Amino acid sequence: MVAVNSAFWRGKRVLLTGHTGFKGSWLSLWLLSMGAEVWGYALEPEPGRALFKDLPLFQYAATKNGARFRNCYGNISDLKAICQYVQEAQPDVVLHLAAQPLVLRSYKDPLETWATNVQGSLNLLQALKPLAHTCAVVMVTTDKVYANREWDFGYRENDDLGGHDPYSASKAAAEIAIASWRYSFCGSAPHQTPYLAIATARAGNVIGGGDWAENRIMPDAMRALAVEDCIQVRRPAAMRPWQHVLEPLSGYLVLAETLALTGNTHASSFNFGPSLDSNRSVRDLLEAALAFWPGEWQELTDATAPHEAGRLHLQTDKAHHQLGWRPRWSFITTVERTVAWYRAVHQGTSPLECCIADLDAYQREQNNVN
Image 1: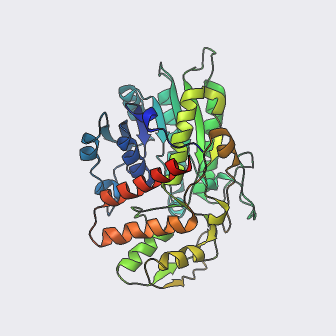
Image 2: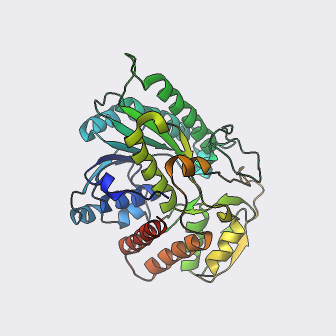
Image 3: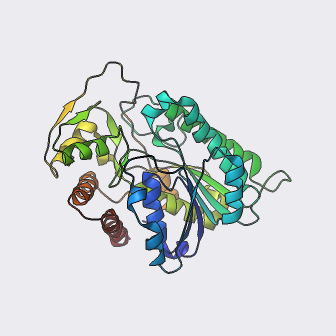
């Protein structure tokens, strides 16, 4: 199986949108550890605790040969600002993670969700079009882009797109818009560019240390356990493809490497999900977590709660066969390392130290398998 190639990233200029978010913070750290130049563009972290605030990325970059970290606070919906930043960064690789990523928030502010997830993605592509050198572009969406049939089997990349809630629908619409942009503007015609290779990456339900978002099961559970409170759970029977945050991030990196080497051969959509054994209920996730940090949970009954999918699985055969990618950590390992991160930070260990420990362990697992 293919592992992330650290040598590829050394000295690469990487435009990373959404670098202040949970996944973006982890990805910033990973890229810097490999000696990349990271040009971050995102909104400022929201008030309250955030992994980006806890990681001293500027200082960490200074310890890595060739690494460089640039931080720009901006809105992906601001076309002029993102155009200016792209021209300054002149990226070799773009990893687009900027999004409004929360289902419940999408019900409260659907217009912002659509503007960010659809128009924001198109703004970035428009900003990249003037580049005069090859650039690999990975546009991250979600596993929730599929028209959910509550099937027992996993969705494949050629299944119908859809979305009941505004978040899912906006991401499905982004997939359609990105594909349209690629078909229309990538090529050798006068109105096209020959330099961009654009793919989309579909993953979701990631867990891992440093996620402090509201209304997500693992951070909600960790906050409750830290104060010896009972965990409140909305939908314990809901099934999800749980994966550690490093799993899809490794997929994004491998996909970007492949695009850089093969161009438009792999410019399409890819699922990045866990093994079949990790498709578990929220109840299973909580029971596994409580084995590593004892506590209690109870179901929160709310008949007025907005719709959320009950069952969602992904098939990752395409990523396996075309990219050589597959998940590394089992369900139990994923839960154990996630809970251990929060518990260690709660006891005084630095978030950076905990992140580096997980990253080192994941990379050892990659190298042992290959």
